[in-house]
Length: 451
Image (cartoon, rainbow, N blue to C red):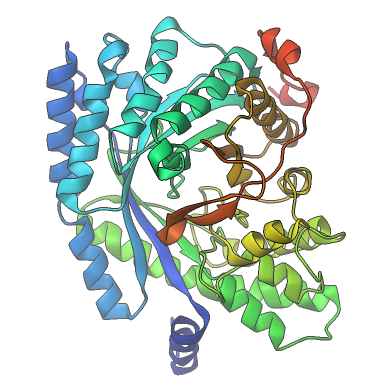
């Protein structure tokens, strides 16, 4: 129960510290839409999404008004589309276009699930489906795509990794007039989860119900403000403060999630505890780390500080919600975090340091602009490195990089809104093509054998 002090404290968090519900995501199963041809499947998918999510935006607005908590994004995730299109993968774009049309009809921000799960091997229809991704992302506005290329149980599908290097390049080229924005809607995963409410990687897993509400709560500014009150505390006390703050943030998220599920006739899925930043000042994960004592994020000590932050957020959030899931950690997307942007512009935050940071946080190398002439094999190698971190550590990792067409180090990309802006960061001038060209798979680690 909320007492008077809790209410006043929450109001203060909202007004001064950027507390918000970052997203309400309605997950929908499209398995009943499978038909014998692409056109019929697309029509059925459009109808189902529009019917089941018809009131999503209204309910979110009503809850925001009633509880006084901003709800920033309203989203839908669906069954991985490749599963719907196994009989006609070359026409999967028709389903993608229908889903994008449904998103526009509903007035939601993004729809995720133009996805494929190829973490162990890749059937011919899956490869054909993945080949459609660049064109589909270039011709839609709200559709998001993801491909799971590895897992702790199955290892890393290096054939899929190599293909994704090419897919990122093609997607960037087809959206070059917008700085390669198609790549901002594309993620390569290892250990992808079925209940992630955050884009661009959200999809509705086959183990989920027909409809579920998953909520992502975010409050980097709240955590930073709490730490500002104890500037000289030792790290144990700082971790305790983060835990208590995460508890309060998560309670608000569960309240909204359960009520939204009730009103929409869906199951309450999970609350995702992730600290998700925005380009707005006062809403930065990087600034939390700097408040802990790192002069510029990316400097020595950053990984240790991030590990402590991530762990404390999870410990506090788990106590506050009956169902925690999704990605749940601290996000470090460069273009979406003003502190990360500034550190990258200074040259302190580099790709190698970001990779080290992903070992201890959610989720991976995220929203990073790299030179447009970066070879596909190098992008694939970046994906492989990140997938290896996820596979060995039994955690979700991901890559969302933008090879900015026609741009190099010193230039920048600007997507606006929550996607923000980013300096083009250097990659190593080395050749990974022979390694990627070997193909095959990297076997699962020995600790994956737990049956």
